[in-house]
Image 1 (cartoon, one colour):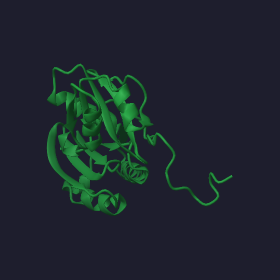
Image 2 (tube, helix red, strand yellow; image 1 turned 30 degrees about the vertical axis):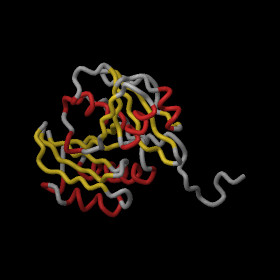
Image 3 (cartoon, rainbow, N blue to C red; image 1 turned 90 degrees about the vertical axis):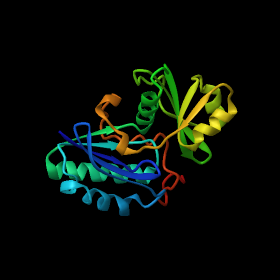
Image 4 (cartoon, rainbow, N blue to C red; image 1 turned 90 degrees about the horizontal axis):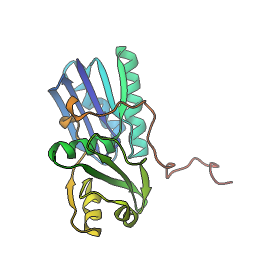
Length: 208
């Protein structure tokens, strides 16, 4: 079974085409912004223009605009190809990658930049069961809640590690090239994990 993976929720624009666990081709570029302009071209450069039996797309949390770009593209391609389409959480993906590299760890905290001086925070056990829902909080509060001896995520993970002691930080990114079935990710519906409202608002919205 061929699987197309899409991530535009993170600072990267990352796509990969797998046949089972075999990576056929991938493109991964850290761009920060401009996912809408970049994504379609990257998919088109994959074998058979990325056509797959199923699509997995990052539903967040992360960039509000990036999440919408990825979901829109995944839905459109699934409709055109008559294939299944499911979501996955960026937090769970980062936790799975970290636990694969640290097989002796029982728990892992995941933290990524949430914007506006806050971070997205969530903890997972060895089975990728979350201890609680994803929250957006200040780094100092995340350090208070962090109880694992192991933390992963973007550069914010190192920041939280500095606020604590006796904790190891593993800096990672949402790279679709690292995916495999044995990560054990739980399929999610195509519902975006925005966590909080977008920073930008339409005129007249929220100003009453």
